[in-house]
Image (cartoon, rainbow, N blue to C red; front, side, top):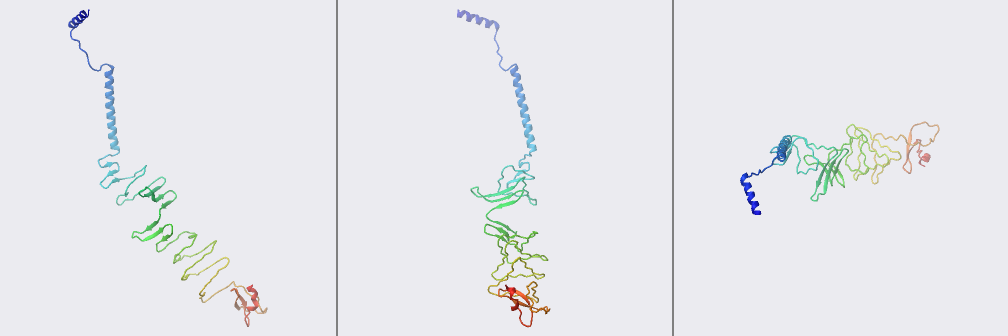
Length: 288
């Protein structure tokens, strides 16, 4: 039986001739393949066009990108620039002859760090104040002369003259040391302590001089001139004491305007109407 089937199949193949099988993608599969290939080509062209457009807009060149140029000495940036993250650089400078601007909506902070990233010096410029944090602050001229210096111990002003232009003057809550206090020409110099005492001390003397004007010392209670080891000299052609108290007149009929200057044991001065002899002892009630 198998032999008969094999012979029948061989007879049929011989009578029909050789059979051809087609290899490939046909029908809707072929159309989908062409569609995907066309879509891929379109995406490639769009990507290439976008890349060329970005290169053109960002101005990519061999030397750099946009206003940023790569040189042998570093990076060269032209025009306005905005940094959204921290900027680390060894040196920042402008082009020769042009200023360098730092602009921020809030503040600009400059930090100096050590090897352990610890802040040693900080400069903060904010909308309300400029703050400098360091162990010592100095201001010098181009020649290196010290103009101003400040640290925890003292503040030094190295200029030849310190001018205070405020209308209310200068307030010193504590003591001040200076060899000379002088007002501008044709201006008044006023030393005042509204609620406390005003003390001037010097180991070799204090000189108060008004070359073109008068000198006035005013106080509410007592004005004391004291010399421990020396003397007090009033050197003038005229010395006036207009508000000294006067003693009672020894003679009711006498109207002369000549008075005698008397001194109480406690140092108080008073006037007594002069007579043929001293009248100070008659008016000792003023000393009480």
